[in-house]
Amino acid sequence: MAKVLSVSSQVVYGHVGNSTASFVLQRMGHEVMSLPTVLLSNRPGYAAIAGEPIGPEKLDAMLEAAGRNGWLAGVDAVLTGYIPTAEHAALCEKWIGALGPGVLYVCDPIIGDDPGGVYIGEEAAHAIRERLVPLAGVLTPNLFELGWLSGRAIGNTLAAVEAARSLERPAVIATSAPADGPGMLANLLIEPDGVAACVSPRETVHAHGTGDFLAAIFLAHRLNGLSNREALQAAAAGMGAVLAASKGRQELALIETQEAWARQPPPLVPLEPVPPR
Image 1 (cartoon, one colour):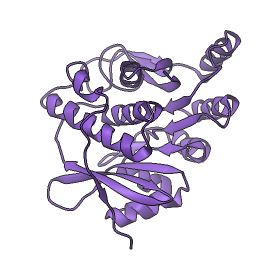
Image 2 (cartoon, one colour; image 1 turned 180 degrees about the horizontal axis):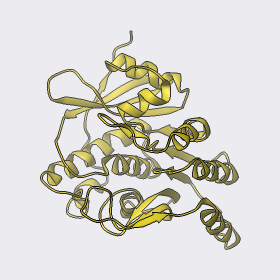
Image 3 (cartoon, helix red, strand yellow; image 1 turned 120 degrees about the horizontal axis):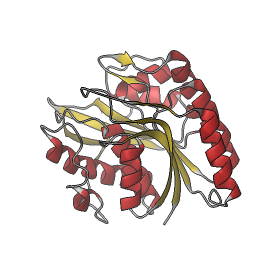
Image 4 (cartoon, one colour; image 1 turned 120 degrees about the vertical axis):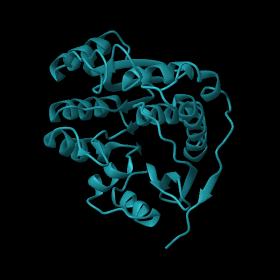
């Protein structure tokens, strides 16, 4: 069992942010300390919504108390997701540094997506790029976020690889990347010693939180001893099971599919090599 600090949004109803990540990591056998950057009744998109951001000074006090109680000792990994302000990014930077260099940091840089573009504040987006991305051991941007972080246009797989390499991180997982064949997409793993892709059919679902799920289940498998490549294969297999059951739903079918995605080891999605330039 590993110990994880997960910093993201939290909702009373639904499966996004920490409301996804905490369940996935716990279901996979890990202890999770969930720090909510914003607490909402539900994600945007429903008829009504209530809640508010949790100020970074309050979160800092919570972590100080956790430290005094001895609960931050032995943290194995940090996962960050929705970071609403530059001050929240600075808070994460502070505590990631305080936890020490042996902690695996997975950064899900929630900044925006196509076709709408950036959907958080400009200062927050720049703080994620400048403060958090340089600390990440694993970075999990979608294709839009990869382009925005790198400042590059991405029209094909090789452009995605070059954009990821320009960020100079040990591992980048580019989600929803271009893939050969109609109706296909790829999750690309870009590491210094090579690139591989999990290719799967493009599924149309209305539920949100797929990025939260992928980052959390990838981290869970890494903490359970899999390599980056093996963890991506397992995460892609789990994502396939969730998406297949989530068609026509407003929220991801995480509860109903947990026996499939939490299986040890799960059926693996084949990795396909990406040819060099």
